[in-house]
Image (cartoon, rainbow, N blue to C red; front, side):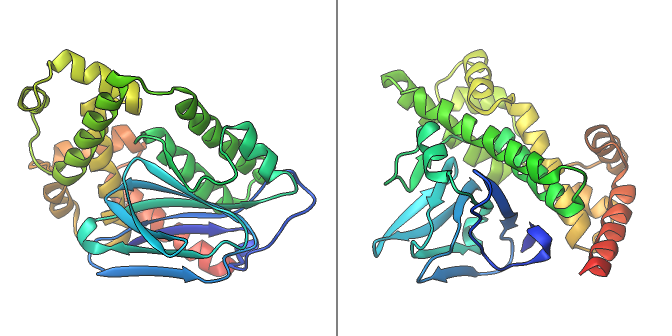
Length: 293
C-alpha cells in the first residue's frame, strides 16, 4: 500500500479551530496494492470536517448504518462528530485522497459552494486537477514555507470551487450518458494503463467517434485520453520509485514501457528529473522529515 500524508505541526490529533474562517489540518492519499483491507471506524467522528476523493477503484461507506459503495468520480464529506465508518479493499485497487479542515465559518462556506447540510456524497467526476490540488496541499504541509497555511486554504477553496461548478452544471439527458461513458473510460484506463491502449479502438468498441470521445473526455477530465493514460503511468512510476526497490528497467516494464530509456526521457519531461534523481530526492526528503519529527 502506498501512503503519503502530512499534518499541521506533525500532529495527528484532530482539533477545532475558532480563529479562522477556514483552516486545513491534514491531508494525504492512500493507494491499495497488496493490502487486503484497510478499515476506518470512528464511532464519535472527529472534531473537524473531512473530504475524501475516490480517484480510482471504489470504497465502502456506511451512512446511518447502511452500506453505500462509492466508485471513482465521487467525493464524500464528513462533518464534525459524525460517525465515520468506511473500508478500502485491495482487490478494488482503491486510490483515495483526503483533507481534514476546520474553522469558524465552514458551514456557510460549504453552503456558498453549493454543498447542502445533509449531503454526504458528491458526484464530481474524475479529474487530474483534483489530484493535483490534493498533492499540492500535501506538499505545502510537508514543506511549511512562508504563508503555507494561507496557501493551503487557497488550494482547498479552489477544490470547493471546482465542486461547485460541477454541482451547477445540472446534467441534461445527454450529460447523464456522457458522465457514464467517461466514468467507464476512466475505470478502464486505470485498470489497463500498463497495456497498449488504442483510443480509436476503445471509442469504436463503445459506438463513439474518436473525435467525440476525445473532445468530451477532455472537457470532463481536463485532459485528453492520451494525457490521462500518461499521467497514470507517471503517477504509478513515482509510487514505485518511492515505495519499492525495483530498478528503473523493471518499473518501466511494469507501467507499460518496453524501452527503459524512452521511459526515462518521458519521466524527466513530466517531472523535471530522471527516475533515479527522483528516487534519491524522495530518500533525502524522507530523512529530513524523520529528523524534524
